[in-house]
Image 1 (tube, helix red, strand yellow):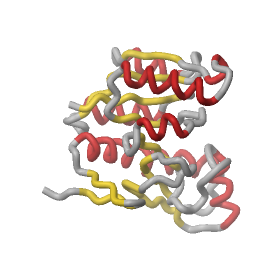
Image 2: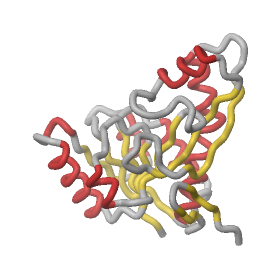
Image 3: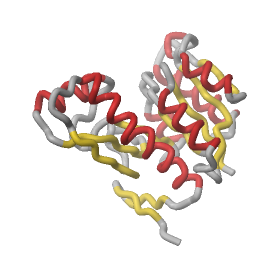
Length: 209
């Protein structure tokens, strides 16, 4: 059984999708053992507590520089015996020390079909604003491993979502969450916990049994 640590900063809708998947038996070889927030007031902490999941808070502003913060976070993750770390709306930058300490053990969900509308500065509503401004007909979400390049890690799963006439960034954001993010993030976590993901260079392969 893999220990899953979920990192959050806000409302925790993706965390809730993971909790629901776990409770429905869709992550049979993994368990969310702790939720760590960068924001002590994050509603995601309440979601975790309602399901009797341990919580912790670590704030970047409590550390004088990125490296000292990274070292503290790595120590916390190791104390919690993290096998897999999931970024579910975590708004604090992870430095190289964290990424190298947990190579191919950190999964992020991004609200577009990478490599479109991704990279530095592309988060939240801005992703959907850019997609609508560009006039693309299909967007979606991507579950991927985290590396030193923003949104540049090996892709695990993607799911497309059609853009509809009259969409606003808010409407599109909700549809992408419901139709893509909340589906493929638990699937990617389950694949990892089942030991079914092989990473070769910048690509992943799913083992078929």
